[in-house]
Image (spheres, rainbow, N blue to C red):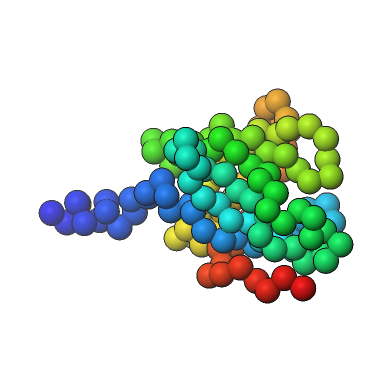
Length: 131
């Protein structure tokens, strides 16, 4: 019984990724928020819901990540496609939740994951007020 309770404490549900996250753009250093949600096909997607720079309001609602599938064995979301606003091309991506699901580590890459970048997103309770 103890092992069952212990295992349940660390179990991760695929829908644990759903929510609002904030991060700083690694190139512009500007903040933004995204919402990750379950798509109708059962994969996970992300869209922009808040931007720090008012000049980038045209990105609100932009679905920039699609196709993520949860791999229970690896405890990560895989096979995602990432379109970076303002950059050409489509990147591959995978995500891991860490810090009791409070932080999302998103790795975007071209070709092999060795040639990419990891960005941390912090979970937030709600969408910030857009100015």
